[in-house]
Image (cartoon, rainbow, N blue to C red):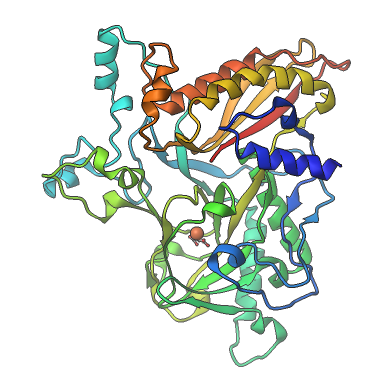
Length: 468
Ligand SMILES: O=C(O)CCC(=O)C(=O)O
Ligand SMILES: [Fe+2]
């Protein structure tokens, strides 16, 4: 029964933009984190490759089909690597202009190339202060966005150093002497899809000793839950790239709202190869004609964000953006190539932490969110992406004391029905639908009064909303 309910919640949430009966949105009580489609250790059968679409990312091994529930449920925020990883948002879509790592639009350089540095390809009239000021001067109210869309997040020093080095050490040791034969040498799959993917891959769960693997999995699950509201991960792939290896542009839309790449590549700055960066098309490219300028040329750095893969960097990105890995040229030695662990954060789902019982909170939550679903109905199909919000609930008063935006990948879909959506707004100017969504979510969630709890302790609700 519980399972049925959970899957119903998951399925219906993804159709949020069509009106939902509020009572299916009951959050599950902190259920155990899960590792979807895990490989059973000791059942080392070849990974069945079907197609890119349905086979690769789920990595299902014949005979091991369903997700294996993890028993060690931990609350988000616990167990982060000591000292905490350094996090940088390196690209945003929306209110700020593109600000890439390794792909900055240098204004002087842009001028040298005869480019107009003022308008980057992702120039957005609604976030241009001049446009907004002009509207305000005409006393036209502009609904503001409350958070920035972010499609790339970089965390340096993600794992405790000792674990990152231990993972790397296992790899190095097994490749140490090419003349020594042992079973672990044969765990690799040379994966070649002509004109699309060429790399050598394995599954981390099969490759690494169990305790080390568990710490890796826990670190990723904890990050996914505490930073992205995602309660599971796909199987973790490990791939190495030597001369000729590449991932051409692709999109991983069905696999989860966030992709991750955790690098075990050593000495990135002294590497003996070129390429190897994750490359992600810039938002402006996907909105090319909005800022198209006939007298302005663009080059790779304005079109593609290149994210380097130094040791122990976790890169998280929105896998709906066309992306790939720049072809590696140079070394043929696996130990000197690019080495990464990669996969997807999956199952964004509502959950409570703290003493508040979801069953007690259900009524207040459903009532509080009903107006939200009504408001969002008007923009059905006009916006796509994931919005993850976290609220703190006072145990004494039941009121919401704080709201944080955990993640936001909402993008407007160009659509001629937009006029109809604007008509619903009773005369307000709608700068961007994102602003409407933010404000509605904020207003509905912060207005809810939840039941109090006898201990008076606070609770936290993480609430993902997915627009398809
Ligand atoms: O390794 C990377 O940087 C990207 C990996 C990727 O896009 C994938 O595995 O689908
Ligand atoms: Fe990908």
